[in-house]
Length: 592
Image 1 (spheres, rainbow, N blue to C red):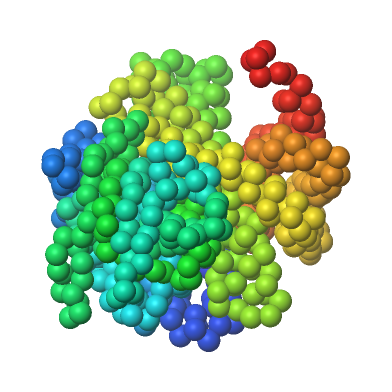
Image 2 (image 1 turned 180 degrees about the vertical axis):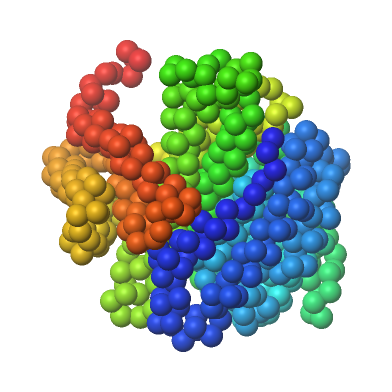
């Protein structure tokens, strides 16, 4: 497997040339004080070093050895504790955390790139700090001052970890079915009892305490999701002076044996009258937990991106070194017994597809992160626009990035041929690890339903129209002759997206099953169109640069490849989305 390398040049290109982030930061008093170009570049460079030198090297052994369970205690793979300590001591767990409680307060546009680096280095490792950051975000937004003062500084410092406890054996997506109970005590605490499954980082030896955010119901709670409350349940109770007290009533009953992510502890947690504390309001827990869930959904999408980048790096190095047959147009290396894999059209197709999708999705991840930062740090029209586009594009980020990440890890494996199926090369690990990204934090089918149902149909396409209007405005402003090869197909794609949206909404008024039937295809039409917008923005910058600079030359070639070979995928998806629900529902269950 190739040594993992962080693509700092592309990250800086996106931040400061494509998205002109310095101008954006200047609009916010907070951001202009917290971050500027030199600081951002130093953060990315230092994070890249840790990912390349401390985290990536432990990935292979972590997969081979995995985590182990013994009498309720979980031991992580060799090297994990040292790497986590190095990572935590550098302040990386709290990079985006609230500065009032010891976090560094960096915007999402910076932390999104951090997440890609860590995921590319080792997805299993990334889950431990990733879950902690998500739990801390939910606590910072919804917790009482006392809870925040007690727990957040330790979580941001990486001394205490976090987990998210939603799923039960009988209750996955439908959280209204959960049975975990919370019984109030006279001192303001609650006794939490029940079992949760699939809890990432629910037990491990990386930190001295683990802070679980647990969904549960009070005895008199309303039925369904309206009766869910959120509770903070520490592994060890915390004394009034901040020191650790007795072990709480939380036990790890087992760990899951999984297809991938072997170095990530996926736990069954049993709560037996564990001491917990209410986060937010009674019966409003699902809304509080969605703060963390939406954070993690974008993070899971970035996992797919990170894995796709690693796959491309591996496959490219292998293709350049591997000698196999001759070029169809004649030997390119006649002094050697065969040409490299790079001479073969199908290998180049796979490599260019990976490159175009990775770089396009990285740009889209930053675009979505910018919307989130706008909604957080700007007011007025820009803040409202950022909020709407963040809501619209969160399910897109989770599902599209992870679907493409899976495609890219498989493509990389295909480049390796038979060696891609063999464990020694490490490529098959990426395939196994990435597969879960399409499943957890709400399967990609659920994300597609969230997009078309809650984010499009619920507002009659208003959020989508904001995106379409922005793209059309960009196209109108960039009608130069040298941009026409990108602008014309972009206008066609985004116009088709608008017509597709209208057509589905019209049909859904007649038959609500049309939404579910079209959802996944619709999400991917949106994804390919959004990435086309990103490539047009990147091409615009590249066209202003010296065309002999290999970086910008590669950008233009890759942009042309995307528009010629990948954007047309939307046409078949669009036809499928418009084909109607009858093809799915006319077949009776007994005929399947």
